[in-house]
Length: 367
Image 1 (spheres, helix red, strand yellow):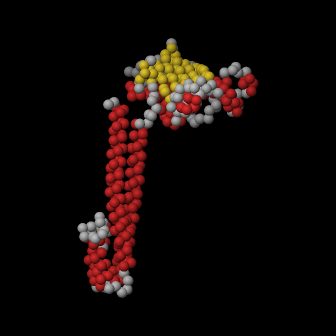
Image 2: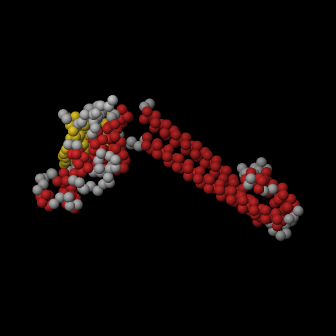
Image 3: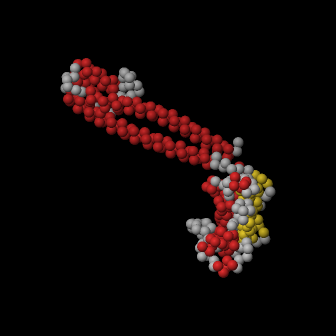
């Protein structure tokens, strides 16, 4: 059994153990609280049993009830699993024997006054216990949610992801042995798939599982992850929609990284919806990024490149990363800043491909 499967099994067993323990303790707590509620109801009803005049049998019956409540479940009739009265109100606050003596001496008003006070105290304690019970179940539900989230994370990969590295097909269980770049791409694609609901098949191709050792590595990783994210979110569609268009049910996203001479060449492509040139042009014009004269001078098929213009996408800044924002324009600007280039090939409804050329730099050796 591999580590990933072991983690799944252990997380599931943890959730089951927690649910069983929580259900057992919760059931036990509810039963105790139910018995306590019955006990409180009897105590609160005691003052109402006083009236003028009271005969000998009524007083004896009241005394018997008080003594049963004080003695606890061993002698109580019809009140099972109730607490002892002295324990419930912390015995030093109430003297049962003194109350019984008042009743036997027919000092009913004073006895009734003490029972009213007792009823108030018991009610206060009961309300506090109710608050504790609610807090207990709230904490239990939060714990259940937390553990369920762990299990969901372990079982979250519903869609099969295929990684093709150097022509060899490997399963997702081998991602841990891949390079940091391969892991970053895999994590990004999985997150975007969950958010968008678009299934995908990821194909990675490169030497040594996309191993990149270069000062420009952060830029390479950020650019690839952003473009893969765009492919899944904007290029992906529901399986039924793709099949209706004559395509495979699942979007295919390809990422290739190769060293060519003094450059890193990065290719990101997908067989999704491609880029609609007319929509791209209209969007650029509406944002006043280009003039009508420039649009008229564009050759057919070049209008899609307007998607690389600064301000084309309304996105938030990318704080602390190699890109100033999560946009294609930011990728183009950052790549050009290090002496590289970005090119684009596209066929609407068929495919879209970006190619980045980023100069390779020699890593400085540390002592």
